[in-house]
Length: 238
Image (cartoon, rainbow, N blue to C red; front, side):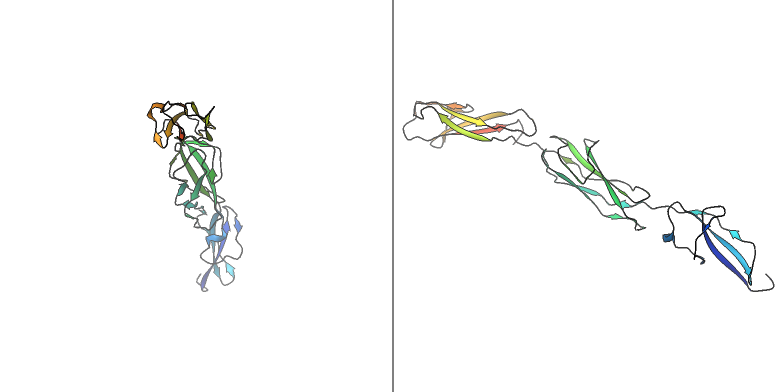
């Protein structure tokens, strides 16, 4: 105006149209931290001549967007795992530029397919030779960030085990037959298994009775020590 020093009054509003004025904000800049994602913000500039306002002009509206949190990666341990192992998924470094509270969703994949489980550890959901991975997705109150996948872990073979082994004979004489009795053979992988046997007399391996659960010899003498060994095998390289 020609009759006074020109000035302007700035005010800020949420939502297009009449808008809702943001109280206490009259500077030419507005801190985004007082806004929420999805807010549609505009400023209104009113020219002043003394105390007399001119016609206000509204700016173009700007929509406030959320920046989703980021996650650097994930790691799965132990890397040498078996069917009875518990696998643990550790999230990497995360960041949220708006300092929103970040939560994490854990998803488990076995051979590329999702399986039940939403915690950071899992057990009992995989078998020998399965490939297990975890996927971690960071989220704030508004958006989910890009998921991070862990290293894959291949479930290894577990060798079978023997619960007990007992050497029996009716008479325990030098001309008796001896039995190598095995009990409690287990294979947690469910593999078929065979038992291999070895016989020793005074510490010397007896080839004539190899892989037999029984042993007898007419060459035994009083005082000889007879022992048997039994080993379960599931066909895997051990």
